[in-house]
Every structure is written in C-alpha cells, then in structure tokens.
Image (cartoon, rainbow, N blue to C red; front, side):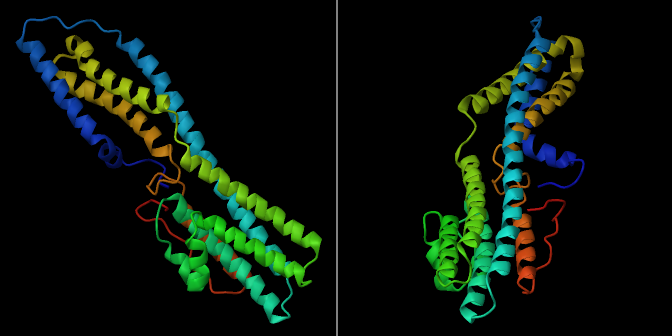
Length: 296
C-alpha cells in the first residue's frame, strides 16, 4: 500500500506510458495529416462521449475500491480475532502441567504461522519461510502440504483446543468461546478467498478498457481544428486522465495481488506476530517499515 499523501507523477506515467506513447504518436500523425492534406476534420460530440465514458470508469473504479476496502476490513477483523484467540488461550490454559503450557504456546505460534501462510496463499506464493521459523518442520509440512494450507493450520488449532478440553484444562464454555473466535477467523479467510477467486464481471473489465482506447483514438480528430498544432499536447494530456482512471481500477480490483497498491498484508502479519509473541513473552520482531513509501 502506498502511504504517501500524493502519488508521484513518475509512478503514474510509468504505469501508463506505453498506451500514452502510442496515443502521442497517433495525435502527431492526425495533426500532421490535417495540415498537409486538404480535408475537414469531422465534428465529434466529444463532450457526450467523455461523459458516458466517465460514467463507465466511475462505476468500475467504485467497484474496484469496494473490493479493496472489503479486503482491508477482513484483515482488520483478522487482527482483532488473532488477539482474541491468543488472549483466551493464555487465560484459559494453565501453566501446569507442562503439556498444557506447551499447548498454549503451540496455539499462539500456530496462529502466527497461520496468518503468514494465509498471506502467501492469497498472493499465490508457493513458499512461506516464516512458517518454518515458527514451527518444527514436520508440523509445518503437515499443514503446508494441503491444498489449502491456511485451513490446515486452523484444523490443527481446533484439535489442540479439543485436546485441552478433553484433559480438563478448560471447560466446555471456554472451549465454545474459543471455537466462536475460530469461526470468526474462518469467516474472514473465506471472505478473502472469495475476493481473490472471484474477478470483476467481464463487462466491468472489457467495456471500460475498450471505450477508453476508442475515445483516445477519436480525441485528436475532434480537437485538431480547435487546437491546431497543440493537438498532440492537449489530446495526450486528456488521454492521460482517462488512462489513469482506467489504471486505478486495474490497481485496486485485486487487493491481494502483491503489488504496491494491494492491502499491506505483510505489515499486518508482522503486527499480529508482534502482539502475539509479546503476549507469550517471546522476543518480538520490529515493526515493518515502509520501503520507498510503500508498506507491503
């Protein structure tokens, strides 16, 4: 996630420079043709075209931002639920006997590994080294070998909670309370997977892109009689605005895409790791800092 209050012009141009360069070449070609050949440029209702295109882009950008914001809300719920599950495990499970204390630590450490595995899973990353620094290799391999590694960690945590109850280290009311938090965690994960696996409908993706490019092609033809030799500059600047609006939708539509525009899952996983390790008295890592104004 980009943290700076104003985006850099260079970063905007970097993302749209290819279609922008083609647009500038087309604008120059139209302008030269207009002055060298005796023809009258047709009068085009660019205002009408631009208004309709603005509506298309507005709907698309709003839909993309709603997806991004929902992803952030789901991760906020995950942070809260992570603190709750750790606090309940620490409060409910005794320190004696040693097996109960080990279960307490195992639940907390497994949950830290779980959020890291979920982050890598959403970003389509095949490896997640943080999991192996938190758990033993057999324990990590057991969950990471599943088709849904994050769900594997949840299943293992649920078994440990059931084991604690079967040994009498927590009562059924405490077990039900922890299971309710586990349901909240599973629901948040399901919402994230829904966003990741369900793209915007084809109409939202195809038509705005098609009409934006068509409008950029028609733009210099409709402006050349008014702007003259300044048509390449004016048309390219106007095209930049529409191409930038189109790019905003592309940047926000997948909040878990592992780009500078996605939800900062690495930073939020680090926040969970710090809170939970401090809760069990383990050394905690430093807070993740932005890199070149981007928090990953």
